[in-house]
Amino acid sequence: MTSAMPSNSRLTMLRQTPVVWTAALTVFAFLLSLFVGPAGVGWPTSTVTGGGEAARLVLMEIRLPRAVLGFLVGGALGLSGAVLQGYLRNPLAEPGLLGVSGGASFGAVVAIHSGASAVFALALPLGGLIGAVTATLAVVRLAGERSGTMSLILAGVAISSLTAALTALALNLAPNPFASIEILHWLMGSLTDRSLLHVWIASPLIVLGAAILLSTARDLDGLSIGDEAAENLGVDLRRLRHRVVAGTALSVGAATAVAGAIGFVGLVVPHLLRPFTSQEPGRLLWPSLFGGAALVLLADVALRLLSPAGDLRLGVVTAILGAPFFLWLVLATRRELDA
Image: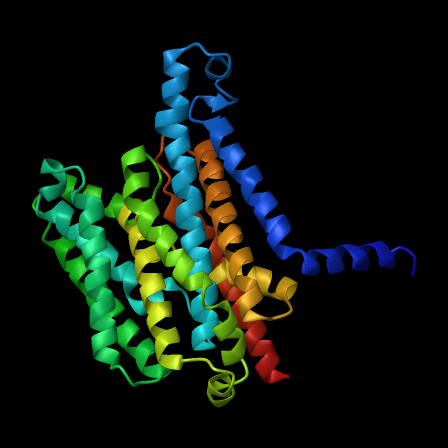
């Protein structure tokens, strides 16, 4: 009995302070991302002491942009996954469900396929942003203004399927093997070779989208007890839908545009953290933002240690981590239904 009490106390504390410990984990992962590089583990000490141009460049031009983008991209994916699962009341909802990731991927692939990315360095992220916005507008138009969540899901699946088919077509018709390799590498997702310019492109849109998504916390709590009850509590369902779609499009679209397709983060993180938030959708948002950031940062650090040459891609690592969790989720749901 006495040995069980400390364990129960620790569990209670984790449930009471999910934002605190997920934020602390994110800070640790961010600092670790600054410490770990292809040349090994360690802080560029000469930078700290004021000397060494090479060390300063390593920190400011390579490690810092990668760490900041890891935080932004992971936070956007984790937060949007939590919001979509709460809004759609679907435990399998994730950012790609609305076609945003697929649209951004196709836009970037078009930039590579057309040769624009070779002429203009910013063509790749800008193409991703244009693709994300176009896909989002198509989903909203297809679903209709007054339709329910099911129509939104179906429209998102339809646009995702279309963009996936168009991306495969572009890959199939790639003008040369080098373009095919570049497309494949980008589709796998990565933070390698990203600069502060990518940070400046993505950060305003991701921050704006995250702010919109975080503003839905109270409405998501009301929605969890049903549409009619939520409306009685003053929730404007139409306005909530616009905020969910706009926030997801801005944050996930910008994240995908600069980092490529990184899957499973938006699905896995909310599920892992939901037991610590009393199953309340509103309380889940901030922990999911920090949890997603920590997961991407730690996965990127593991990537550098496992593949210093950069052969292994971040999207592959998150898929390897996320796929077993997805299978476990399916089996757990099946056991609940059988019981």
